[in-house]
Image (cartoon, rainbow, N blue to C red; front, side, top):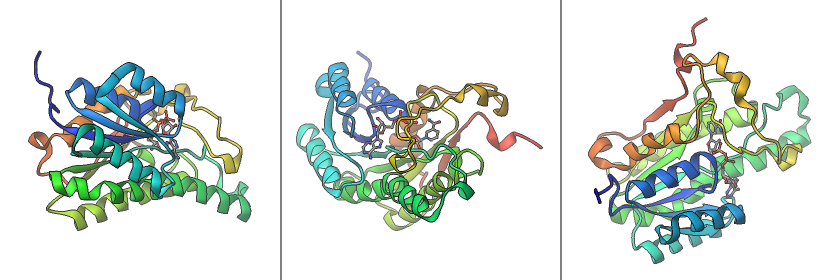
Length: 259
Ligand code: NAD
């Protein structure tokens, strides 16, 4: 068997049970890595173990809770023995809730749920993983979004949260250099089960990205696997050891939409 690009490496992926996170787990395993996962959906967690067996170590928990991160890092180290790559990815969407339609109570509740998942969840995860990453000379990869770079792909809450993630990548890259590299991947429209917010009554809503293709220069909506190679590149120091603080767009060319 040919050695994979990530043979001998151990990653931890949050939200690895579905969508982009699941594609990253599948790709990392295919590249020879062993993977820890923090996922709040127990059925998706069980499916990972069914499909990947002892290549994965899955912890069921919520990224808004510090103890869930401590537990998932501890489980990853216990089962796989080291940690080289931390992928913060679990996220929720505001389904483009318009700012003017949100009164102060809904704004406050929506902000708490969305920022605690999309921003605090990343901060807590990196915090918990950092000692092990320093030990291994490891790397952090955070899932951003085209909404971290542009307006119009979500509402004020989601777009602000993803812009915050870009700030987080830059500041952590600054603070953790030269020991730990910190980069991001910014996908555009992707066919996934991305959920909304309980606070806004959209928790079970699902994306219908079909009509978006005409706004994308490359003319199609992506699948989660279309982004997974970028997470592999950023995880492999042979290909990215001079990169930190970078955000790689994977959005069908939104930069060149034109006027
Ligand atoms: P998804 O819902 O298919 O996957 C997200 C996973 O995270 C799910 O398995 C979910 O159960 C888990 N999760 C959600 N909240 C959690 C929590 N509080 N604790 C633990 N696990 C939790 O959606 P996806 O589209 O793959 O989203 C992954 C990331 O990609 C998110 O950060 C999202 O903002 C980002 N993103 C998605 C798109 C898109 O078009 N789908 C585009 C750009 C960026």
